[in-house]
Image (tube, rainbow, N blue to C red):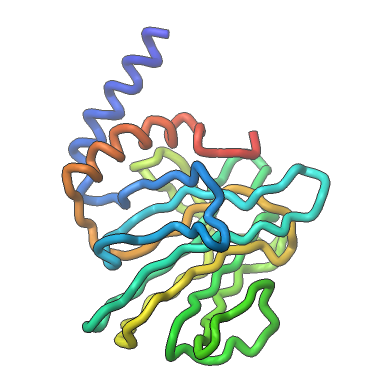
Length: 211
């Protein structure tokens, strides 16, 4: 028990010196579903890492779709979205979710989607690889684990309005993932407190739902 407390203390000291090079962590405690999406309430360009999951029971196909929302007002915004997955033994080797950015002024997606697009909106779909295909991985020192690289979107958007990011698994397997929103490393006091709470959990794999 003492060794665990010592480990957490060391993590906290490391965290205080590393926040300038990391995403602000957010954990999905309640499903980001239609009607109750995750809402970016400030600083769309601030780098946030949403540790989330698509629900599954290990037997039935997964039909869960997570939804994120942000609003662009009056000025162009650099929108950055990245979808990655944790490397943990062999649990996530075939979990390859997709995401779509949905908003005003975007093109017709050109494919059938498992959700409805609001009238006057378009969508940019970012596909992942097929299950079983080899994927590049990288080590993320802030959370202390490796991740599979996934689809990325980055573009300046100037049309004002509400935008949505939909995350789903077309292969209906479900699992844990991280959605990164924004590129700018901006840390307020509340963000540091959030990281002090969540980072030890992430380092101990407590954000994962498949184990």
